[in-house]
Length: 212
Length: 261
Image (cartoon, rainbow over the protein chains, first blue to last red):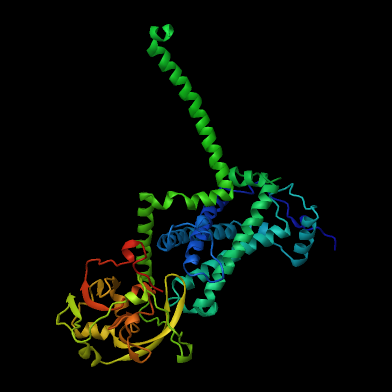
């Protein structure tokens, strides 16, 4: 079972962009939305810390609780609209199944082990290895959890089903916080990887033609 | 010196032109590079939040129109039949936290004997109410979660008159848009009519079975488990029904007006 996951790739029918314009647009708009959501969210958190710490005010957005809430409840629309656009385009263009599947625990462990030994190549950036597949699928799921827990915090009376699903208002606060932390952790790893393979940044800005 | 005197205009203008060209190229290049670099660094995050974008007038206008948009969305999402969860007595938060824009010692003292609740605006009966008249009306009790805009929440037990009963009793125009409140602590706020008529919206006179204490809003607090804490006015002195947007103490400073949960 030495079948390297790289070989699972189906031959592309015709060369096409691995980073089409809609994807790049969605990526950067969501990067901005997430930046605003996270930094304003930290300011909101500081108003009544859930855990034994505060975020340094200098890295938060909004100036005061009311300002941070305004940013948070404005950028949430951008996050939701852009994320929906991203998921629907991925789904209907076939990109979701082409790029992110199949994905298996075995492939993940194999690729992670190769990556940690520095043996995972990034020659073809239009092909995602299993670690990338898991990471990107995870971040889609994580943003979904953030939106759902956010809905419960915003409108706990109007969404009783979601509220009970998350175990009530107070537990939704923990879910929202943990999902935010995981998103930030993803971004940290993501930025390190971009720094290690800078051509991916270029591809996300100007696009990249897939290898025939 | 001489040269300059000979053709100062030509010289100066051409030198300036060249200089401007060189500088503008550099500035453009530098600012572009700086922008890209900043966008890539964590410093960008700090700058974005630390700088003055929040103070910019355009940004403020955009953010408050988004807040108005969120008012409309919440009005549309509001289901008059959706009830906030109620809890058993064992789950009441003790002691229930005091929260206001002033310290607990500064909570107003309202004299029961001289107190009159003023009711004005789009109502048929504008007579002022004594506390005993309000206490004579049908009372109801409920244990609900108070959710603060800061994020914390606490469970308490409030009792009083169903606000929809009171509005009917004074012949309020229930097609009007707003109900406004003025309080003894100079606090003021306003709510939408749909929430005012919600079955769990109570004009409360008691807390945990006893007369509403001073720190929780004596003589009366409007309690709405469908709205955040700052929308629940305490020490109410005047109620008015209107179609003119009345705003509120925190709302005028930027808190969302609907403030529903």
